Image (cartoon, rainbow, N blue to C red):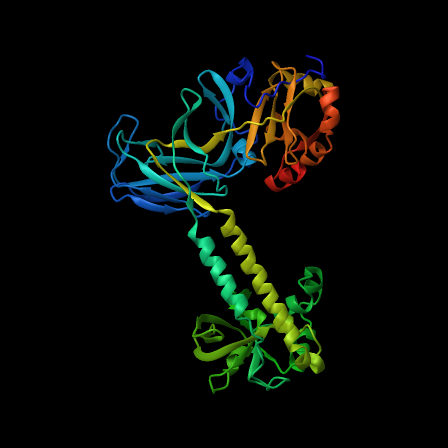
Length: 492
C-alpha cells in the first residue's frame, strides 16, 4: 500500500486518472451507497396517446404519441411506463452515481450543474424502450439557478462522456410574481377577526368532536402522558368550562382555519343549523362528509354504525389549542392576541410556500431525442485555486484501509454543492484547493461506510497561510452511512 500521506491532484480544469484500472473495473454509473440512490417517479400511459407528465418540483414532460421503439427498432404500442428523477445539487448527483467530468477536445473539465434529470422508459414486459430516430419529447425542467450561461448536455453511456447538445435561455417562473402579489394583498387586508358570539359559549350550540383529539391538545402531544391519561376526563371538563359540549365523533378530515391546516377534530365548532345535534353521536359516530360552503361555514354529515345519517350546517370557531391557551375568565380579553397568533402562523406557512416557489426561479426547456441522463451545466473555472501538498489521514484500522486504498475514490464537492471532482487516490499526488465555505470531501470505503471531511472542517482551512506552506492534512472521519438525512448532517 502507498503511504497514507500520499497526496492528491484535484485540478478543477484537468482531472487525472479518471480512466484508471480501478475506475474501469466498476460500472460507469455507480451509486456509491445503493440504499441512498435517489428514487424515480413512475408514470404510466398509453404510447399511442402520448402524455403530459408533471413532477413534484414543477417540471413538466410532454410526450408525443407513437414515438417509442424497442431495442430492435420495432414500434411499441399500448401501455408503457416512464421512470423520471432529477437532481439539483452535487450530493444527489453523487448518490445517483452519475459523473460530472466533461471531456472537450481532449481536455478534461469539470461541470457545475443548474439541474440534472434522468428519464427511462419501459414496455409492459419491463423491457427498456427508446425514442425512435427523428422523434423527441420536451422536458421543461424547474431550475433553482436563474443564470443564463448554462448549456444542455446528454450522457452517452456507451462512450462514457457528456455530449454538448445546445443551449437555451431560461424562462422565468411566473408563479413567483403571482405568489408575491397574493402575499401583498393578504398583508394589506389583515383585519382582526372579532368574535360574533358571547363567551363562555352557549351550551349545546358549540361543540368539539372527540375526546382523543382534546387529549392531544391538552397534553401538548406528549404521547407518554396521553397514553397514561387515555381515559382522563380532564380535557372534557376543561372544554365544558369554555361552554363546549363534546362528543365521540371520529374524523381525520382536514380543515383550513385562516389558512392553517388542522383536522376537524382539532377545531371548536358552532352548530348554526337551527336544530340540535343528534343524540346518537355521543356514543360512536364519524363524519361522512365535510363540505365547505364559505370561508368558515360547512355542511357536516354524521353517520353511525347503525346506518344513521344526519346533515348539519356548522361553523369553525377556533382551533382548540388556541381556545385552551388562556383561562375561560380571561379568554375574551385575550382574543386579539389569539387571532394574531393564528395570523402569524398562517403568514409563516405562506412565506414558506413563497420561498419554495422563488427557489425554482426559472424553467429550462429542451427537446430530448434519447432517454438517459441529461444535464444543464457549464464548465467550472476558478482563478483563486491553490496547489497544495495533501496528507489524507484515515481513522480506520490499517488492515481495513489496505483492502480498499488502491481502489478508493475521494469526491471533492465545490461551488455551493453544484459540482464535484472524482479523485483516484492511486494515481495523483497534489491537490488544487479553492476557498469555499460549502466545500467538503467524501471517501467511499464501502457501500455502507464513508470517510468525510465536512464543510465545518473545511471552513477551518487558513487559505492565506496555505499560500505559503502548500501543505495540508485532511483528517478524514469514518462514518456509517445509514439514512440520507443522517448522512447530510455529517457533511455540514
